[in-house]
Length: 251
Image 1 (spheres, rainbow, N blue to C red):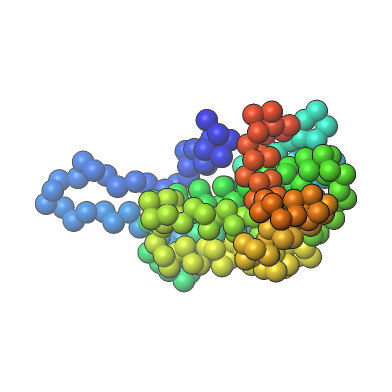
Image 2: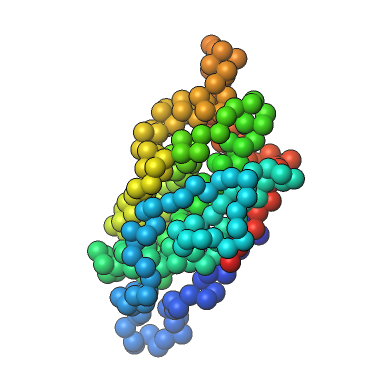
């Protein structure tokens, strides 16, 4: 089972949300599965997650220093390591639900689960992008720009989520008002680097920036070939059968 699905399953197993009782007598009014408005009242305010520290580097402490650290990528050192922090991501999810209910009090249990999927997959894709950068630096000899890379990693989250907007996906099935609220808060970054992601929100701008960062020489190497190096890198480097990273769920 993918680490993302394992984490989602673990969080939902302990979450105080109840599914519809399908055994209710037919003469009873159906349970609409709305979450109680105060279910996550103890969750912190959303603003705490608008400020982020860099999450890729040579090493990280076993336990993150801040609740806003959702995942990390440790550079390749036999091998690289993606860590998703269960406790912080669970808090992140509860905070998003609480924030959404303040504007839209009709959040169902199924939509709450879809919000969790969106958040977990987004964090995971962010860390996978850092792996792509690490791999390409070693392959092509590029340099590490911490804050620029964070902007590109957030932009990749956006690009990836846009690709999941099919009608029957976790994103497509979510109530559109809830989806809008969650996406607005998810991409409301205030920290250096992270907040610059909108410069690369368009696919063309994203591909141009990623190519320039990962492999500047590609402009000459692939001139007049029609080959899109950035599109190739984000699609194929992290899915290589010989991938050079491990992944784990942290506390």
